[in-house]
Length: 418
Image (tube, rainbow, N blue to C red; front, side, top):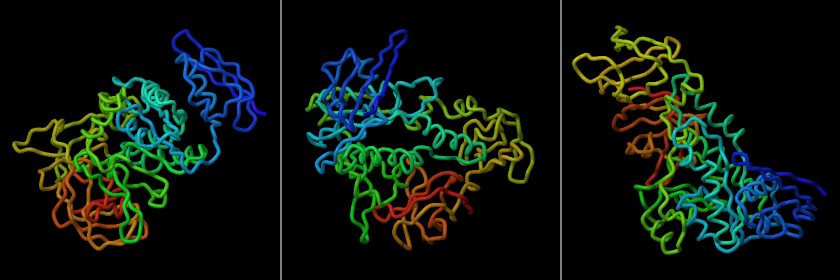
């Protein structure tokens, strides 16, 4: 027998739930405001119980850390964000689905915290989508882990003069790891998410591939997923468009059908990353803006606010357009020059080639076009010699290798040269 407690508050309102459990079954419960008594229910059954919002919050907080269920080959764990994509993924998952939402750290001073995919409001929307179908929903509080694993390295990366991509790090290492661990505890055979990507057989391996709708494709953001986990992952929306997803949600009468997209880099809370970094302690300290010969052209308020390829906000006038070429953190300096000086053809990345290829299409930003090049594996990743120059390549960015539509490698850019 064990006893677990969960509480929740809104302003001056507060609720407490106290449960006594024998393995995964509730023996007794002190819980007011729920739609039904909890005694005699399994944790899986309790996760589908609705009621007063605050009482359900308290129940979720009680069972989240200790949730478990017997294995069922037909059960699918569905990652729920509160948006339309995950709501439709839930539709596809069948009657034995169990929803799960990670609650992640969000800057409380951000201007639009409610739109983040992991905000308290998103958790409530995800739970409502599940409970409307009688589906269990579990919340996993990962705020402290997320802060240390994703947010703090993001801040440190900018402090070193890098341009990190926290969403790729989150998906590739943090988010899916915790979701798959939940799926195991929930007795689910696989994990479904609302991402637009596909899993295919390629060169004898299961690998990630672009979605059928290239305009919505999210394979770049998922590219650092270990292929060894893909037999446990399902992307049910990978073969359809966003418009088809919304239409499906509308036909099913889902509340999420018209919900707006959540922003990327959710922990920013809708803010500009520069303002966020200032709040996190990066110093706004005046430094020099230099040309490529080392001549001083002007002043800036902090090197970390500039990234290669940036044109706006340089603050100097030399008669022709200039771009940020690189930063020099140890001098708090920004080097600027013409666009042609941004051209890079040799890239070294730390990561993995998932299958050996001599040539690949290399994508360096989510919204940028891929560039073809020759690839060579290294002991810690790979190098690429591009057929055409790429512009604005920065350490910390992610290089993703595609063969046709299939992700065959991914890594963090360590260096780039002309």
